[in-house]
Length: 248
Image 1 (cartoon, one colour):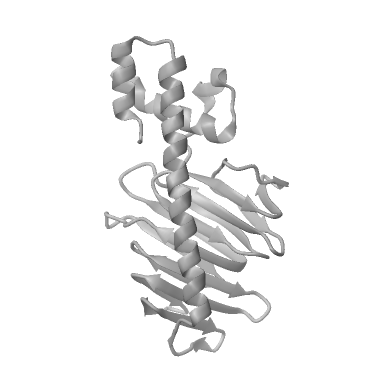
Image 2 (cartoon, helix red, strand yellow):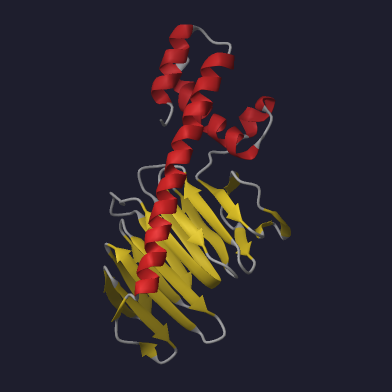
């Protein structure tokens, strides 16, 4: 009787931990697929036309928008693995978010600025991770990549640090391999060029930070697990069953 309700209990607990919702509102909690894990400087979340200061760990849903001011950064993290870095003076909207099933589907609309992503390996044919900027779409299958969009110059630059990505614009598709970048302008695709030393170092810093964030997430989930086992008034046998179904 209890085993059928355990998965719902698990996702509600994770949602409560991220949002600070009261425990007696658990039935209304939604599964947390993506959240603001860290905000450096002035970072804002826009939802339903209202803007507020980001409050990590803060859950995000489809249509949410995250903005950063000058000298600010935001790190978004998927519950199932993967980190997105939003650079200074940037604006991104979550246009698709469906990562709870076997198919991992996420799409971001970069209005302007810089975005880096470390994406978990996508294991099904229907899975996708894409970033759209200025009419250019960059998609991946398990890699570390970046997309910069200069709205004034109408130029999109895609860079690959690990794996490879594809870019689509004007009905044409190009693959950008590891260690290369590709600029797309109104005139079309520019020749691919090797990443600069500064770009390589920036990606290395991002990979280090994303690893730290994943570790912190594991620690947070373990802390949640310990508190649940201490406070939830259920028999020991059921606690053991819950522990087996928690995502850590």
